[in-house]
Image 1 (tube, rainbow, N blue to C red):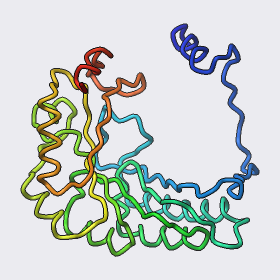
Image 2 (image 1 turned 45 degrees about the vertical axis):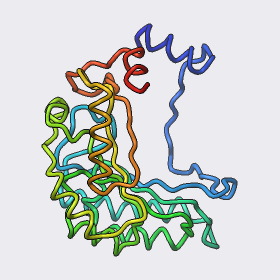
Image 3 (image 1 turned 90 degrees about the vertical axis):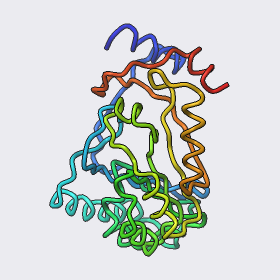
Length: 245
């Protein structure tokens, strides 16, 4: 572990003690009864392409591996929830990834399996890659019980999409598709603090999002995680602050 990493750990944890990792033998129990209205998160780690800036757990989509993963996921739900005799109230259910919409055909199956143990009171959300924004996928998500979708746009502008290795988005087509299926929330996510990005670029992206059919937007700073292969460098903190002023 490098000196910088060690110093950062001590600063953040206010402790000189190193992190200790212990193996999980499968007997550890999660005390769900002690948590009031928790939110549920389900990770679907499959993508058609792997973005080099993304730090999250993901693999290339493979139909056989995907099928086995969903079956194992249902088994894991049973194991974690075995002691729940009466459906426990949870605030929400969110599918992240990866590209969870790749599981649109089996999402309803997963949701029904979870509903044996949990009563979801405030909606079900799913992340989407822009490539997954098509009428067929949206209708499958709607039929499965999804009420909120969050689309990882990152930017509508070709220059910044090129930097991120992403394809240009057909805004008019996306607007047409989103108008075909009604969801409680249509959110679009953007990355800020990209090289050369200005406040006017952010404003333009956000305006295009609402013009396209979004009723919510979120922006996240670009972070150069040490374990990703992105060639991009982080913007300095003062520049980030200036960008958001």
